[in-house]
Length: 79
Image (cartoon, rainbow, N blue to C red):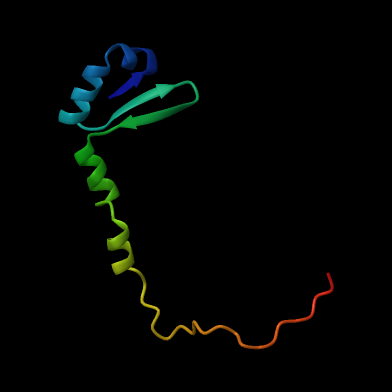
């Protein structure tokens, strides 16, 4: 369902209830539209949030990538 902003503000509890039981609710303002979804639906769409530990453990494999520092001398710079 799509709500006008003023109506959604006046019936916010109903908007939330419908989002929980019926699915996403669109709220329109002159300059745009937002969608109110349940947390369950949000997590389904966005995926499980990753902790820093999970992110680091699932980082790309750098095998074969040369990570050595270039040992060539620096260039002279006049300051």
